[in-house]
Length: 81
Image (cartoon, rainbow, N blue to C red; front, side, top):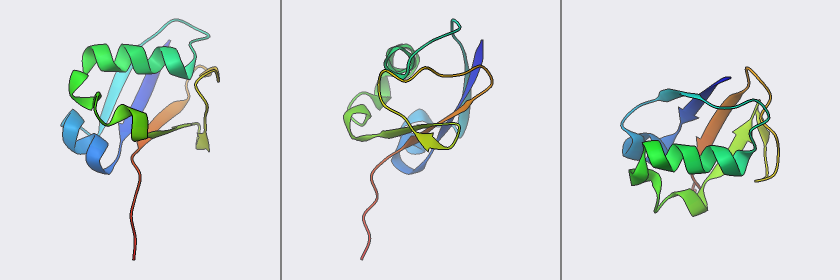
């Protein structure tokens, strides 16, 4: 299945793109997606532990399954004043 990944803020800067499509097996979990993503974009490595991952506009945990056609967002922490 194809998964569309959207990058925001520092993740976008490191990935050097706004979106990326990955071909992954059906039933893939978020933790498996991160492994595949780091293989494709190792420059995300230092940032990965700090990222929040959203699947279909809902924050997801490492064991959550990504449904077919869902959009995944990588969201770094934000600071405000």
